[in-house]
Image (tube, rainbow, N blue to C red; front, top):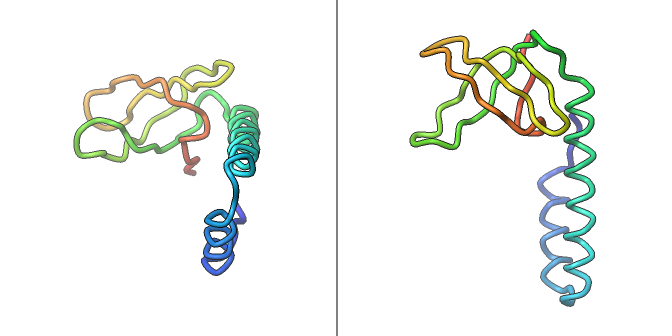
Length: 99
């Protein structure tokens, strides 16, 4: 996925430091809509049986690799391949597809 450069991120940070509260609220709304669009795109791309990785929120933040066993509107149910075979309900935007 294409992103922006480090120099561009520095410019964004500079602009944000000069914004008013209303402008920051507007940026927050834009960010929220962008995040929702990314999640919708990830749900559309995901197929049951695909192998994905994600970072767990539990202690140590291990990277979990698993297979998608169910798709919902916002989340994917992923069954761990290695380890204990646990299942996780993960927001679609948090997973990275592997081959």
